[in-house]
Image (cartoon, rainbow over the protein chains, first blue to last red):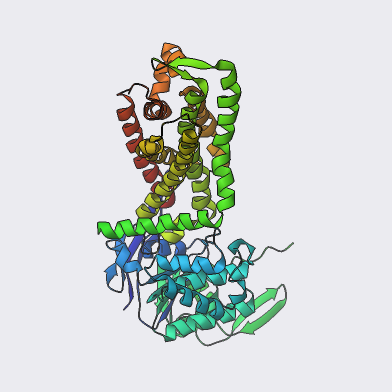
Length: 270
Length: 258
């Protein structure tokens, strides 16, 4: 396996002086050529888990092995094969689009000429080659998101960790990004995808871990989770008072059944 | 951890800053060098023509030469502090580039060394240019730019540490104004840039010597004007340097890492 999380726990002090256990006893593995989804709503502990997995936060307990290397004991070697796309925008706005990728590649000891070749190829692959000379801050939100995922791929990582990579993308862009991720998976990358989009998890992930209040409540393939927890019968859902429709069961139903919470808070209506 | 690896990583971070500097050279040239010019012009030439000369460090010296040397310390203070405080806050809070770099094979510790060393480099270069102009104006001896280099770099690192500590401890960018007005400006005004510290009342002299800029100015005047060496300035400078660099790095790690 390329990524192994063993009993990862992260507890930290919060503003009122108390402690929050943001990640509790989380264990899972991601194999080469597998996409593993961490599915949960905002605040479930996904981003804290990612900060621990990338080695940025030290864990309170547990370990993270990337290609067999403990990321907290030897972060330099472990991160040489790791690509991370954070949930927040961490693009370097002091650089133009192309230069940003090249500069980032040098952090992985990639020679500049090779970095330039890879950057050009990635910009084409992500459909933003015409923006190569633009300042990052002039890009639209969707373009920035694509650039950030592209940046995570510049080192051709064996392990790719993506935190809500498609947030803010329109449906067309989202599908294009899914195709790129599936392509990376087919090439043998181990992908950890944190998302609160049920459809994304069902479409992309070979296995899904459902996370609530920092704990993994179940892990399985999307199909098995649905079959085990809900069954094959259509689910009746009230769209608005008096209007009921039936649809196939999905991971949202599984999450609701196992945790009592929804992946998305229902929108407020006037 | 391999030291060569760490040095390479710090160099990588430093080069990132150098790239940005090179890409915006006209902007940086104006913002970095115009300020010392204005001070020298206003105080050295303007006020200097009124004051003539003064007695300082047991020597008679023209006010223009006295201020020119003080501007070296002021340049180190302002350039080091502002680049690390406002610039550091923007990079840490808005751009989040510390987070972005520290999930690559470069560690957060190396990112922060790169930040501090760049801030110090930029301030040192600015002070060196002031020193070269001082030589050209006939106020400093020919060897002054080389002679002040070690003290200039150590002082820049000290003030960068001060700025980065402020960035790490400020919740908002506006909060940087507190240390700016309560610490940086008092240092600028009372630590010997514009008048000898000895002309202050005894209690204020003691307070001025407790702050690092007085030591910086004292050493700069020894190296550029030949004033007597004040032995206490070295341990004061070293203590501030070690304390601020260590504190700023610790504060920034605490700010970023849960």
